[in-house]
Amino acid sequence: MARITASVYTSHIPAVGAAIDLGKTQEDYWKPVFAGYDVTKEWFKANKPDVIFLVYNDHATAFSLDFIPTFAIGTAAEYQPADEGWGPRPVPTVVGHPELAAHIAQSVIQQDFDLTIVNKMDVDHGLTVPMSLVCGQPSQENFAWPCPVIPFAVNVVQYPVPSGQRCFNLGQAIRRAIESFPQDLNVQIWGTGGMSHQLQGPRAGLINRAWDNAFLDRMIADPAGLAAVPHIDYVREAGSEGIELVMWHIARGAMADVAGGKAPTVRHRFYHVPASNTAVGHLILENN
Image 1 (cartoon, rainbow, N blue to C red):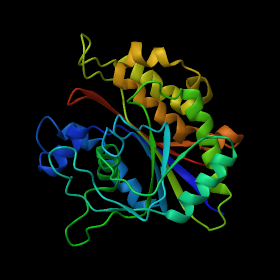
Image 2: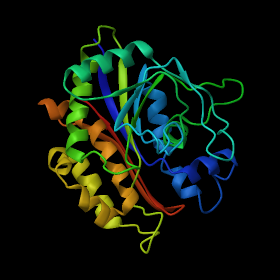
Image 3: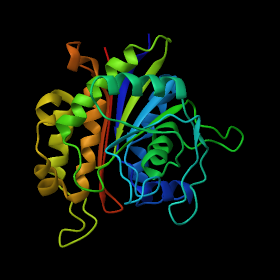
Image 4: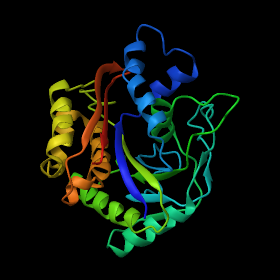
């Protein structure tokens, strides 16, 4: 059967993608940000999965304000990098895994979670920036991502948004779905977005280091308790865009310890301020 071997959590800041694309990663401002992913790149080389299930939010690219699904799973064979107003990022086409994606959709919907099935969409920085940070930027000689990716988009843009508890429960359903897939596949599940930030209003530029680091602590050691944190706490403590962190609960809910297994091993933890006007958070947890 397929199995989840690890979960990865990371911010997906668009300015980070621009820094990569424009060759600015070694500039004084950006160097500490990218140094935090050096360990990650080496870990990924040694632990390359067969498939990545990547949880992210679309930024009004694939879904306009006319139509916003709460949870949407990509079932296509490939996804093009989106043009977010300044041209697509110079990164490879994302290859999907339609068979596993369709199986997950079938299983999760039968577990009473409503998913939107998406057979065609472009993917924006919410997905491609984490790929660049963790996998490294593909060379022109081998211009391809290292494995297929199943995009899973969560609405954290237009209210109402799903609760952390709903996302945590959904992660458990996704784990059951993956483990019921008959093919022997090594799957990683990634939760992206955050950490604390606010892009508008009187609190624009808000960053809450203490809250962010407490969130990382609890993501590791108390995921069920953390999932119960109400929506208003994210807005109050982490800013209006800090609500993106609910997506991390999907990845954490899919880990083995939540279903009675052993606690995961923390392979890497990183936190840095600032990157653009956002706090960067990153974790790698391995199943045991």
